[in-house]
Length: 610
Image (cartoon, rainbow, N blue to C red; front, side, top):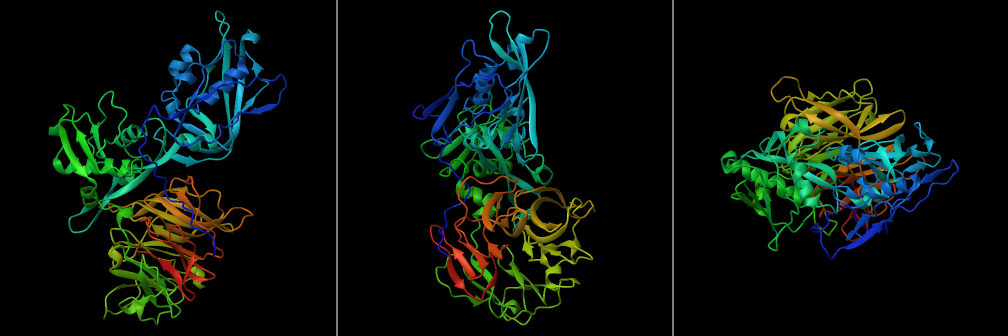
């Protein structure tokens, strides 16, 4: 109970611009290639201060194959925008054809060079083939999307000695770059770009719902320009089927645009190749909203965005305040209350930002008790609640208003034990309610339109086991599933595809692992637009609590303070709201910069709206 809350929030670095005042570190390829057949590691560059830019040295005159290999690999980890120095280690033809932007392979450590490079070709002294090897951790594709990976990385590189100059150069290599994990963490940062849910709107005015699409960009290589280009290129392949962009097809930055950064008024001008006649005012507002939401990751003080057309004319300008009213944005919605079950199994609530420990029953039948509730979920607008009662058999949905009746259950389970019955329900911003039935004889996932519609069974075609927990993202396009199989509980993220009037029904597709190193995930909660707070164990390890991204990457930064015997957790998309957990001490909370505090020793099942 004495551990501090030490962070874990998404890193939001200050304005990232190239500056002559920044420090510079030069990397020099200085390793030699021993005559023995041992393997040699390419040491990862030590972690540098975020204000330090790292550049590589070109190949030294007369460098041997080992020095060329070492220097090339170190050049891949530098902050050279176009990898010009790395290309100097290649022959002219190889330099022209090599495409480093195709992929980034991340290895647990620096890549290993096979030092006993095999001779090849007719002139054995002028040609060698070397092997790069290592343990894969992840890949970043051409769309800058991260994906965890495992297995062995093995790639051949061919070197040749120029007959005229006598210099060794690489003339055969795969596209993409490769580096160790520490170099990747120094070179790249995770940033959310934003699109709109294809089949979701909120409120009477039909506000579009903003959806985060995390990508990795090189943190010291004009990151704001990189992010605008990535945004204009469209969503990643995984998220693409369920989101839309307001930018017309073919929209791009004007030729030569670079160095995008806010001015001294915290305003950013973005030059596009569009004509004013191509853009309606409402669409332009949505476009600017996408840009502003995206770039606030890199420049938290950004206050407004101006989109300019091909002739330099202003297409539209948008302030931060107007952007928040243009689109529904999960992390901008501060919950009013924290909810949990008290010792009488009633739903109670307390102010989300309260420093006290007092709670009161919610209005309506769920606050009156009598159903032996096991879990609860409250709609995003905090007008409606869903409770699982009767030892997990029944799902009830009712208004959070005085005088209402509980009514009949919306969903029932025939599972033999409470652990084989209904999971904790979950709401999205559309007002739809999600719940899973763990009945071993008939496991199913349901969605209830607006919480009161007929339960629709959701297809999960690639489900590898039984759903133990299901938490839908606020935007209604993604869902986190804890799946049990062979004694393990793993975390997966799925893409929610709605029928859109096609009659195909709702499905969860594209399942991917979000915490591949955790084999016993016991509790989850959404904790931002693209991250979750997870409680789990690695193989042979102890229980831990940490943040993970929906793409499976681990955020660079400390985890929440340690807490033992965690059975449930509650976080909000708004990072200012304290974390809450149900542990051996009952309900406890972790305000920012403070220690875990006891709230209610008899309380269980804490939740924020959603």
